[in-house]
Image 1 (cartoon, rainbow, N blue to C red):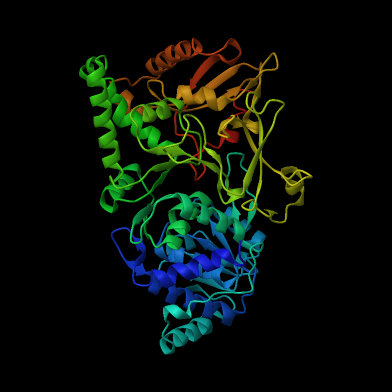
Image 2 (image 1 turned 30 degrees about the horizontal axis):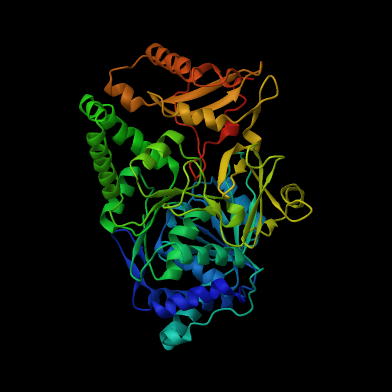
Length: 553
């Protein structure tokens, strides 16, 4: 990999796609690649005037916007480190991240700026609006002069595509991104991602994912999280694709509407959206009397599945090459059904610490229930006496792996082995063809009464597809018995006229008896308890398990 490979990818794309649309707010304004280049130059002028140096931190908080993408690109091509902050963080978390990262500048949407007291962050020179790129706070009276200088420079110097040459002082091993995770364990750590991690992920996507110049994608996953940022934004920008940002909090209805209008070439999504679509739209059709009868006749069965597949493809815009599902485990029932109807999807595996991709296989070669195989230049190792049969912790090594956790030597010693492997915290096996099959998180594993390893995610996947249940958390009580918290599917219950707590509890008890017939004795549930509200989740839509696992102890 050549020096500054990621910055070179950005340069080449801007030059080659100069007149094409680049970053568009859904149903609103748009920037061409040439216009993005002018904005990047404007930011570089401001950074230079403010004395921002290589490695200085520039923080960024807001919903998905074309200006979010511009600030991100402008920062990393300058050689500064971008610090994306999830907009769902509370004020205390935001102040902590800004202080911990020692950020020099902050770009914030006008609404989110109301959550921030910039006087609590001593290193900040000021705050820019992400909404309009104007000044929101100039605490040290330096920003206004820098903007005046940048405005004048842009006015007097017309930018040509042959002028696009960004920082030559940045190496592949320098930190490009400082990403603060919000995980299911409740602990936020600053992940230091080098430029080589971004380069490896993007070049892999360019090599294996089909795009043509002028194609479009929908960006709705949180940009502050690396999954959405890398594969709904950076890859596409480096490939000459137009990125259409869903600028508001994306509801499933809004996302599907955007898919139908934009007709994206590639669809990225999380299991929650696919599973809701299956439960709310597909299952009612499959359970209708007429369709049940048709499914008993082989020829008609194929016609039913073909029709469902066509309608599902159309709901995602009908123009995509495949749907890539990641960020969490996909229900085995849903995955098996999608395979049966030949829906073009695949399931990948990654984590923030790898920027994010670890394993992937195209939908044509993807094995059911797997997460694909190790991507180029990455090694996967299973800590097990029999890696293809007995689950062990998944270890990874390669150019995409993080530099470490920022200012956190204790965690770095825990996560890296002495010979350079990174512990993922996930359990899995790898078959003879190299395909990875995950079993659960090491920290979520429950030790059975006789020493058996129990992965609650496996039980939850079955429970979540049972009648009248939307989502669950399986844990153990003070007597080491397995219990489940279940959030009811109130929409279905209301439609059926089931309203009382007693009726719901009877239905849950019936579900408990049914699932126990499918489980070995050591994995059987002693209780399913109704939980009245949706579980709190991370931005990746993983349940924050730590909030619930001690409720029965």
